[in-house]
Length: 265
Image (cartoon, rainbow, N blue to C red; front, side, top):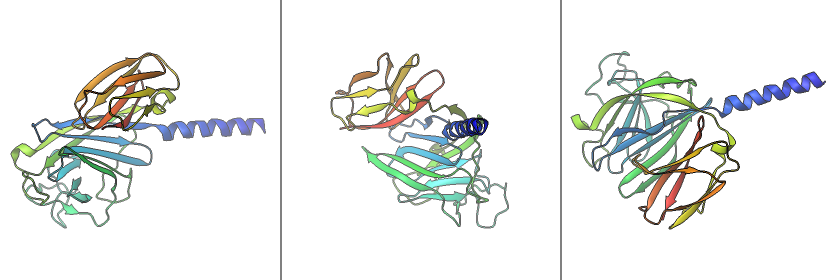
């Protein structure tokens, strides 16, 4: 009985650890064009993918997975002003791995992305959506749960419009990004921010200190605006000079990273 119980506890512990692992690209700076900045982040767990897109609020935004060009059959998502549409490059029925430049990406028969939040502040949209890691849809990219790299193509509308038209030379790009493991330890996952929202200051608290805890704050464009090393369980942060809007507050130890959203009123 004791051996069985210990074995079960060990199995459950390993299962919890496996399900708590998150592989993340971190915030990727896709474009730094003034007024049209575009950033994205992909977080992958055993079961789910979370995609964050941050860009201009007045036009469509697109991101293609496992691609270095508009290649038929490759997975792509496009926010069309209402939905994060699930698509693939190429015209309907086009064989895979052919050039598909000039064709509007085809809508998948099944739409797998669910928008969790869609906020606009000062002309900047922050969109967060999720889907299953492996949807079973032949047109959807299957994200791996390992340290790896991924090729991405991105684009945004040429002008202030959600019509899926030609994006222009300066509104698209290619990047290769790496997924790294973020271990979900208590110091990283259970930190709190209060009050949130706040106008002049907030307190950031961690339940315990495990070595150096580095705090970084990013604006919605992915620009780092604040850093601080935390050396106590509760620290007051003066935000009186910050602009109003949404921020990402990240705590990092040597091997662990976790991020929470904060709203400055």
